[in-house]
Image 1: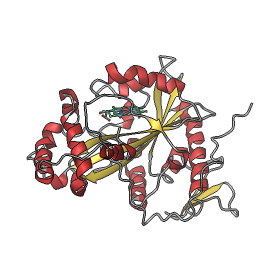
Image 2: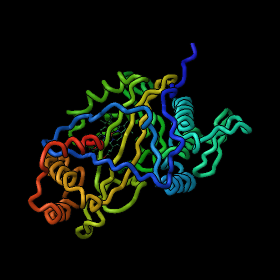
Image 3: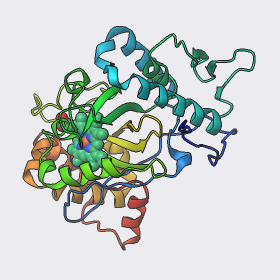
Image 4: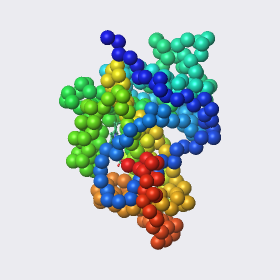
Length: 339
Ligand code: HEM
């Protein structure tokens, strides 16, 4: 029986969408209170699967540059994932042409092609393809694309990273970790084994085609590097300036592809100067509380010893004795992606 493709018939078209005036969504993925390590997943509204904003052209340039100059570093695909990559491309094409009909079109006079009207580039999407499916997909979306599969490694119940296009790796080399199971990919993450391994493995086995989810996370960094393969530095020559400190946050989505059963893990990375929070006292307060609440091992993993004092001093200057007035503020940050 032929398995139908992902169904985007309920996705609401957004023809009036203006790329150049749409700012990146202001995720504030932090919450005050005791630190608990959880998966932090929530339901993903289908319309929001792939997002586009005014950084599109600039990031597309970086994507093409990396494909030209460091192909191995951005694109990896193991043989068992070739079909899943094609299925992922089809899903991306189906979604984008439905959601952003003015920006992504299937030209009637050129069947088998998609036209990206934002970059003015056209790609063949029917067999035989002229480029790797992930290379085409990466030139349509703003998210990094990872495909994980079951039944391709030593343990039948584990998921293994089988393909990736990653313009914004958060301190890892895809050419090293390709083929690794989830637990091994996460081995540098403190507490992961005790707290997240079991729930995550169960989640991957049970993920339904009809129930895509999203989550947010964040790191800190001292410059604007998106393509960050080396681990985040453990020391800095002199204390960083507050203007240099960035919140590197990710919006991640997970969904299952119906035909190959691969799990598609998409990651959009945002770099926000912490000084952008100067007028968001409630969010800045919650952020400082969240960072203070990290267990020592998490603080070390996220490099708090590098930027923490500069950040604390600045928060003191901006916040003084400020405390949010009620829980409504916490609700607000939750709605903007707090994990
Ligand atoms: C429900 C799914 C997932 C959860 C709950 C999760 C959780 C985490 C957590 C807690 C961290 C530490 C950073 C932080 O505090 O946020 C992390 C890091 C990371 N995750 Fe995941 N993750 C998930 C899926 C994945 C998948 C599918 C991949 C495959 C590419 C992946 C790749 C990574 C990498 C490369 C890091 C950085 C590790 C390092 O420091 O070297 N994650 N993840």
